[in-house]
Each structure stands twice: as structure tokens, then as C-alpha cells.
Image 1 (tube, rainbow, N blue to C red):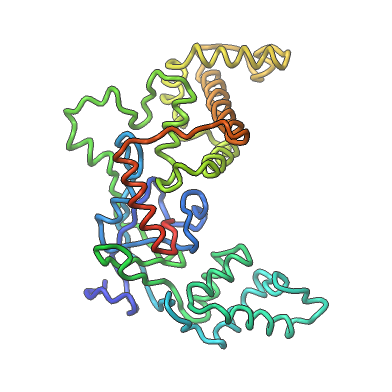
Image 2 (tube, rainbow, N blue to C red):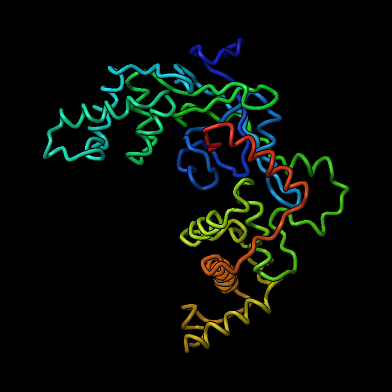
Length: 357
């Protein structure tokens, strides 16, 4: 591992990444689910405190994870100038033409010919004033950032972006273009670490882990969204709708209802509301409950509790979605502490072009 933190030099570096999400490996698949930044890549920092800030975005004291990673860095691209040569750009286009048919994203190759369109593409891309804008331009045009990053690595061994002095602490921000170069060494669960220090604290009234307060399911959904949405996206109604669509399309149930113990607790805490919703839906569709569910009604069965709990949870999400569509939904305010975090992170996001995941 490199002893000197010169991120322009080839080597393996120990860095940190903060997230509200837990995962086993980094991937560009996370792009768009949380962040609102313009770029793409894995967001890393040598400052553990800064990474921790990103992992402390949940409401009601719920925190995320700090990842301690080793990353293999080779050649950086520049935020300030064009260092990628025209020859390299030409080779990148050739590779992306083979893998993604990039030229047809700019003009009709069958009509104008590949050579003509390629000259036009190079001329257009050369208008970018720095490497970061150039690679973002290509990635956004073809809609495949992973292929774009691979092409730049294959041609010039470009692996990362160095963004210096992005915060008052003058920290260095490293954005790695190829997630497979980031290897997770240690995952720090901030909730577990906090709970070990606060084991004597009464957690009864706190919305932590998979425990379910006896509140309407709609409020449970809202509390979940406070924890799951990126802090800077909390007041973005479109982010709420995108999150709802994502959860509705999941083959597996939402994380809250992932385990049998979660299912039983959720159903038992909301039995009356769930059964009322099921009855109303059955009457509305004019079919009995067994036909609606596809199996016999047995309120003691985990299968029954799971199906009806997910139905009620999804129904509450869909109500919120429709209210957003009709402009009748107001996002509940968060605590003053969370508001300060939102302002702090919003100011930070405005100074950098790169996503956290």
C-alpha cells in the first residue's frame, strides 16, 4: 500500500466511503437511486469523519455504514483541463462503437458513413474544456457509464478523478470510475457501534432497526423514507415517486418485511388496519378474500401475514404516490438537526460533480 497519499501516482490506497445502504461490493447500479450529482463513480475520501457524515443521514438517529476500502489507482482525469488527447479520444470512440454503437447516437452512420460521423463526434466532444466534462458527456449520451469508464481505462489506464479542497477542511475527494477497483476491507455499522455505547438508553420510542411503532402504516412508510432517501433528496417529491416505483417493482419484499419475524411483528402491530384494507379491497373488486389472495385466509399463517402486510404497505406507498401526482402531498418536516445536515450536504453537493455511489 502507498505510504504517501499522492493520488496521481499508481498504487493501492486506503480510503473511506459513507452510505445509508449496506452492500458487499460497489457497483454503478446504485446510480440515480440516491444522488443528484452530475457525474458517476464511487465516491471516496481519506477522511473517515467526512465519510461518517454521509452515513448519518437517517432520521430519528438511524445511521448507515462506513466502508473502509482498498482501491487501485492508476491515471487520473482532470477536472480543470483537457489532458485526454485526441488520439486517445479517437480510440475510445472506436471501442464504444464496437460495444455500444456510439456513432449512431450522434448521427446516421448508414447515411453519412462511419468516418464522417466519427469526425463530427470528435469535433463535438472536443468542445468540452476538461476531462470530467468529456467523460460525462460520453457516458450520458450513450447511457452506459460502465462501458464508458472501461473504454477510458483500456485506452489510457484512466481510473479516477481527484477533486481537491471541496470542503472547508480542504479534503481530497477521489471518484473511482471503475467500481471493481474498490475492494471492501471493513464495514463499520454505525448503528451497532452507537448502540454498544448507548446500551442503557431506552429505545422504546425510537424508530430503529425493524421495530414497528403502533402507528398508521402510512406513517411507517414515511419514517422508512426518511431513513432510505438521500438526505439532500428528502424534500424532492420526484425522489419519493422514484423510490416508490423502485420498491413496487422489487421481486422481494421491502427490507422492513424481509424476515418472518419482521412480518409477524408488522402484521400483529397493524392487524386491524391491514384487515380493514383487505376487506375494502375485496368489496371494491367484488371478490372474496381467498380469491384475492390466491390461498385460504388463515390469520395465524406467516404466508397470509406476509401477503397482506405487503399489500397494505404497497397500498400506503401508492396513496402517497398518487397524492404527489395530484399535488396534495406535503412532505413532513424533519428535525432541526436533520435540517442542518440537509443544508450542510446540499452546500457540499453544489461544490462537487460526483455521486457518492
